[in-house]
Image (cartoon, rainbow, N blue to C red):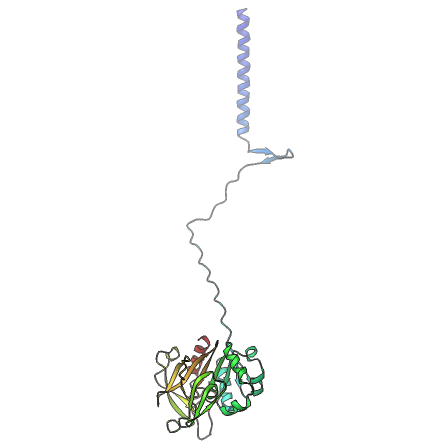
Length: 305
């Protein structure tokens, strides 16, 4: 009986050893296969993890930053040139040539348009040339239309007669005349006969320390045709002097604020050349004696002022 029990135990140990060996073999076989699983439909899915692709070398230099595009330049102002009753047409032509030279868009308007149009819908700057201030006063029916344009942010330029017209008082040969536009609240005083003759070159001193004067000598010449110098009133209106007559140290070119706008008033004519007695005329295209570069600098300053 003991012998039978011994043989039975030996068989159990043999079978257990065989089963363990079989499980170990199966485990080894599965360990050598790719990692697989079944999807929801029972289909075998390969879950083998792919080796990552080569990553860029972290030591590579970064790309240069792209500079942003500069902002577009501000559009150039549009000019309206008065060419109606009282205007000096040679001076109108010289102003037109000056604006063409510097690439500005311009149009002409007459006395009726000055009184009835909406200048702000058409122009950024209106320019009254030399001529006859008394005719500007007489033929323009509504000066308030121009005052309103400047007061609401427009820019006014007056040359010689245009500067007389823009002043509250025109003092001619000692006699004072009230004028309705009154962008400048002081007096425009002229002519300077006996000191500077009509058609001569006036010696002008650009105002020291003013930005417009930086690139110009202490003395320049400008054509003079009986224009004014400027005398401030006692009410304290701001007055910026850009240049003076050397002969009497009086303001020859000034700028004044008016409401939200501004005005540049010129006694001499930097847009005209030296007067030629032989032809009784001027070079209207920036010839000898004109001061186009200075005038352009003054206008650029005025626009940004």
